[in-house]
Image 1 (cartoon, rainbow, N blue to C red):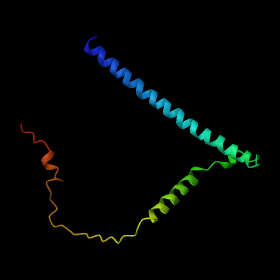
Image 2: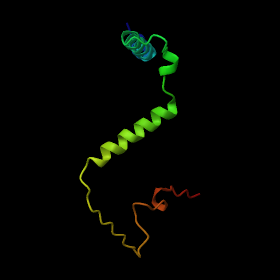
Image 3: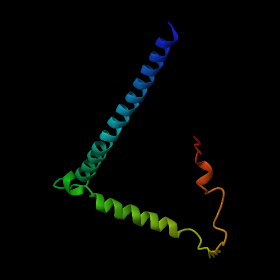
Image 4: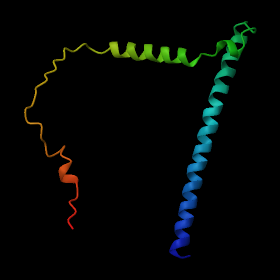
Length: 110
């Protein structure tokens, strides 16, 4: 085997690993909602309420966003309240070599 075939084999194996991992992740993400819906249906049947089907128990994206925002705000309020003082100081010297674009340009001379 020469170097070119080794490189091709390594590239092919890498691509196969990546696409296999993506396929497995897709299958997992596709199966999780179905498993959760089966669990909810089982809980409805166990509670003696079989007329509730899974379509009535799904939550829309807007409701999920509202729930996530409420949880986020709740957990942010658990922290101690700190008094923050922000001081803004105007600098008269606007030039800075870190922000200067002039030094990054190539000067072409003919």
